[in-house]
Length: 370
Image (cartoon, rainbow, N blue to C red; front, side, top):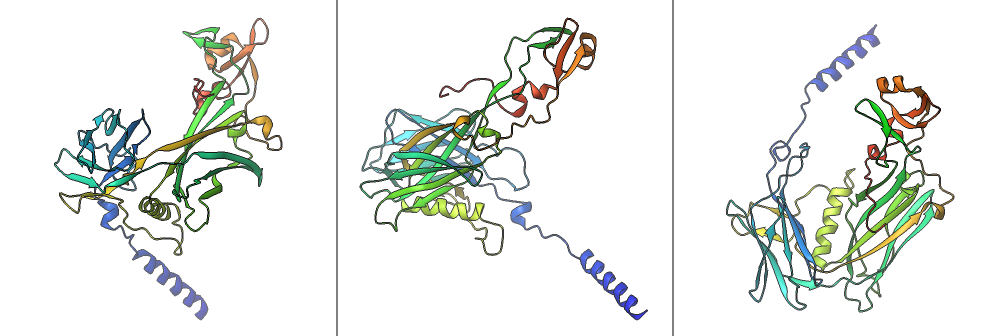
């Protein structure tokens, strides 16, 4: 009886303590500041367009797209007093064309918002990016590992960053010959079983060769694709972009990666404020997030076709597709997807998902580089 009473009292204490715990939501989460975010760089390659996106930070719980910073005055200024104004196109996107950065010159970014707040970056030099030696891939651990290789024979680069875009082709298991229009079964005018889908890198990828005797990057990992991924089902392509960084730029991106990608335990880097090399001269509390850099970008594209990875078994996403046969009257009533004619009165049918590749997020237009 005594043990039972102790157990009951213990449970009551646990419930009482648990009921007294309120979630802590600091003001930085409930009422975050709205700070300027600057994304872009001054491309030093001749004949290119430099683009900057300006937006505002938002609460972690906010699911809307970030608010664009519109109607700002954006200029790039050289230390020798040349000024190049950027033009706003779509909301919050500013572009500069026909201007080539001069080697040996330094430049800064100047932003003046409609509220009259001025932001200036540090003056930064022009940094040329060495070419990408190769983008390689190999089958390992049941999937495909893609990596990048590069070097600078002058040993001047030392700090690198990469981004990539990926595109893959896929097919539905059935090609639809007919469709329903205006309550009639008619021949389909558009082929909808072959699609291309694209994505971009989301992680910050940087490395330094500063501790190496030679400025060589060998087999830096970019992406691992599981062998079951439908990206490898027909043909896959990756376009890699390589950027050379200054030491300050490398430290900015490296710190940003640590506090955004490696948070999960008490041993990981803890959240902290990181802003980059852009600051407000009007009000120090008006923070700006981003890093202004001037330089070139190098690119390289590779392709992987299904026959090159015969040991892998990519899924298609269409494993549950089934075929039925229906008469015309049932088709007009139930409106399934029509594959082809079975006989004079019946048709092979399935679901729309199994014939229209657009329902898996792709587009019908073949990319120009395909």
